[in-house]
Image (cartoon, rainbow, N blue to C red):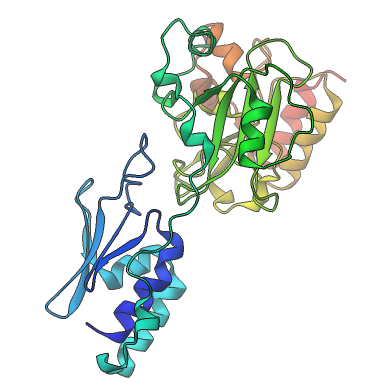
Length: 329
């Protein structure tokens, strides 16, 4: 085994969930390529194993197999360049020290209380949270990600101690997680199940992170939709929701399709449309016969929002013209 192999494997651990060193030539972690498991974040079925003096990558879940070199290229291109450069120097493996090898097992990050909450999949079908999603016709493929808490503020104080001074007896909400592109939980949104002044509450563990839903599943190399709320995004094939974030905080802008709510009489909404048109984004401007305000309401009215969106995309001057026809103020 080479000095460069061990050094860069240890450097890569910051990207890899559930990373640990099993033995002197074996590392285990959750797969970078397939995410390993949508239901169980503790699954770790990917390995880097040294054979005949070099490391190879293999995942027992998706069967991805590649060399350490090309794994690093996929993981972090600048790290890959440094690895290639260092390999060319031919550093002797005798220079490997216990400090470089690190501990036999990396300390596990604290598990978020989010994973202790029951998923909607785990609830009885007549539970009020499950019934809420069913009545809104939210696709069932999202149920394993969505959680339920009977008291959102109390739950949040477990995540961020002291976040809410007043907890109260009940604040039943569906918890919508925000994962980053590596599948790490960075925040969440609570959707109230009963009438309240705050229908949505968004909590970020790190306020410097963008409030983006579905970063971990969205393919930014292909056209993708950008909706205002996660529940709307769940009806589209490749989407994120910004949840109050500014869209240019993430990459892949050239493939973005902006999908705002259908509110032609809302001045603030019109300003948002104008801003994205000026920034040269491709944007959906809803046809006049659609009266529903958002995608979820359109689904309940038996429309097919994704088809409508694709048929009503505009950019540049044509978007400005269409917006002037659409707005009602």
